[in-house]
Length: 430
Image (cartoon, rainbow, N blue to C red; front, side, top):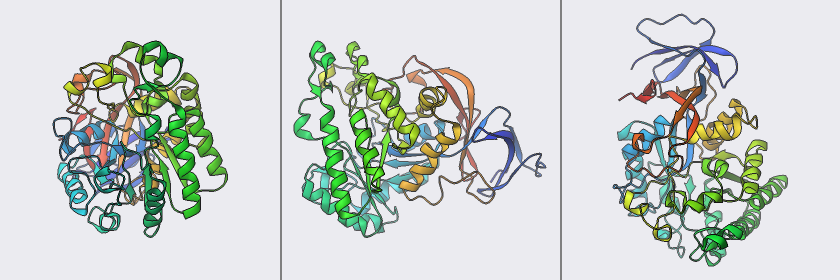
């Protein structure tokens, strides 16, 4: 294992210091550290050192849709985005609803070696919403699943949702809900409002999201378990979660990078790359989720990285799949929307993209302060850089990024997973 001395990097965007990495750990942090014999030196001047990012919401598609993404290609994209840990959602084929499937995904992540992969177990068998999956078996498996979700589909049955919350309470698990009342979104294509009427696209009302969040918070208060709200997108949702937190309830929430930046106006292009679930909302909603992330009402940023093959997006809007790429651009979007606007500091970014998601996912080796003795999971960011997003340059097998051609700030220069470089000089290191 190569030892590294990172010199003069700004820790969480603050004071500059050196970091000595060796044997999978941060050996020392301080000023003017001596260069260890045989260590590779990296000039960190003007770079920001962050703990390795953790994504609580990633679609890696394997097994079953390797034409869109594999664990290998998805984790390469994650490393390039500064991530050292990702949670892989359960809507694969076969569905990750058994110990065998989650262990397969977990092992594929270990073999790839670019970042740790933590499978998310399905809440219900086959994501069908009628019978609880093997929650206990997945929790006891080698993958040690702690987050469960039918993401892509809502656990719409209130009685089944209650049972799921009760079941995972026994081992401290979390139910991550895709908040979408299905009967209010049949055939929905974009945010419901004046613009959807003008464009002739079936609307997706805010209340479809907000009603499920409100219901699940009440159920969770009754059960006393842990609830996580996936990809929150509306002003009303922020207000509901804020009220729940004031009551001291065990509720956490996430927002995606695209909901921090893009609005429903993108639908006027009829370009299906902007078709996503939940849909892009109004400017008022964007401002509300930014405020919610800044004040901590929204706990984390999660990418909802959703790769699709060309044929699933290069078609008419109504026939296109929902979803966008997110891993390689997430940090840049957060810098653009939150840091450069002075809504958050880099220390806040570390909190929302590393510390808190690791805590929600109950990960012991990730989301740790950059201090001596901690696992050497970290990323170096050049916040002064600017880059133009080019879909063909992504490490993902898919190209459906909504930021095509956009200039975004920031560039991940290096990423380390337990002291091993996965990215150096902005390129994959192996």
